[in-house]
Length: 321
Image (cartoon, rainbow, N blue to C red; front, side):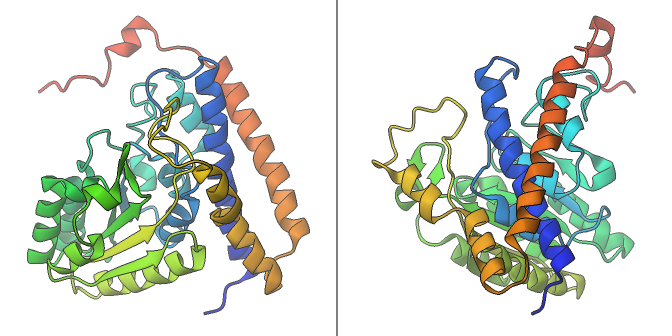
């Protein structure tokens, strides 16, 4: 299929925004400016952008504890996200969500979720709403290889198939569930498991933006036709540890160094679009400069933003009936 230069440059901008955002989160966490645990997704940008670049604000996504990239790809404000991750009063969720619970309903971002496997049942609800109301929209859950072993995910796959929900299950298989290799912990095949629930399921190269985009296009067409759910297992590489500060003793010698050299989805994207003369190196280099300025501004504004007051901390915490 053909791609316009404007679209490809926009996709590259979003992938680079995720990369620089995550790298800066690592630095700010190490500097003591971000509280709690932080799980970054650098290395997995092609999946987030390949999936979300085809969704509107009306389409819903549910994310994981490693959800910054999904948020940015879905259109969440980068400055508001940095403020949120730093726990500031004017963050996207007023500083109460932090890194693992960012949500922006206006953008169709149902929320990141610190509970492994907690997203798909919620996304089923959004998919059921779309089907019942006849909106023609889809709902997408992001999952990892670790969550593929969770009962909640199995139940969500079953219910989505039984009710023929427009739910697209994305499994980002980065090879590790926390510190345990998927080769050891995941019996069989993730896509094969999903297919057993009577839905189409694909295995793709998640480092290839174009492979992700085209698989997602097939999934959306299937779901919008009323044929039910669709599953995509994308093989990706996690450049960092499970969390910032993870010593990663479970990873092989030079594993990450080699991955950064040979399995970087941004390098792969740049190589293809320049070889095929779809984008110029100059145009992408200019995007890099602009994104770096955006991230610098986001950090400066977040550092200068106020902490929530005592009174603000008690608002939007408990439901009152």
